[in-house]
Length: 97
Image (spheres, rainbow, N blue to C red):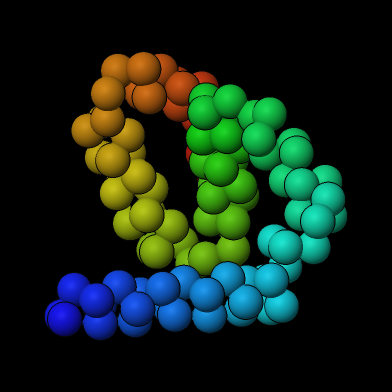
């Protein structure tokens, strides 16, 4: 009886979640979601990681000088701790002062 009860509860949850996703989730707007996510799907990992790091460094210029030094140090330590192929992606990383 416990297995039957659990099965019914989870089935009900799945149906309620399906209903919620179809009525409230923007990803269910048909082709509109796929139109906006096409360029991201076609981007390879290295390009995405370099782009993300570029945006991060660009935003780093908006913080205070002391905070910037701390974040740069932590970021350099993180890069140094990564695999060699990830380190190679950030060889040409330039810090603007």
